[in-house]
Image 1 (cartoon, helix red, strand yellow):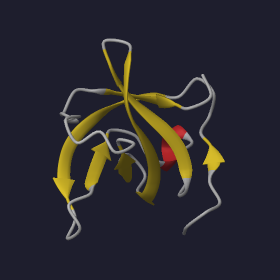
Image 2 (cartoon, one colour; image 1 turned 30 degrees about the vertical axis):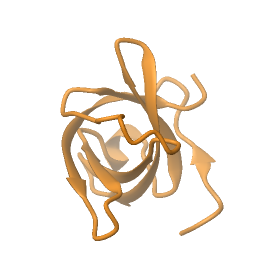
Image 3 (cartoon, helix red, strand yellow; image 1 turned 60 degrees about the vertical axis):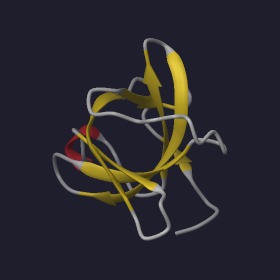
Length: 92
C-alpha cells in the first residue's frame, strides 16, 4: 500500500468494533463492515463521534463482513478512538 487511496462508497456507514495498537503505537481500528458492504483495501474513511471528526482511516485488510484500517489522528495524541465510534466515508 502507501500513497494511493480511493474514496469509499459515498453513503458508507459503519461502527468501530475494536481498537489495537501496532508495534509503532499506531491505532489499528476494526470495523463492522467488509467487502460485502463495498469496502476495498486503501479506501479512505473517517472516524467520528457525536458528529466530531476524530481521525482519518485507511483500510488495510478486508474480509467479507469486517475490515481493519490504520487511523491517523493528525498528530493529536489526546484523541482516543473507541468501540462504537462511527465510521463513514470521507466524501460524505
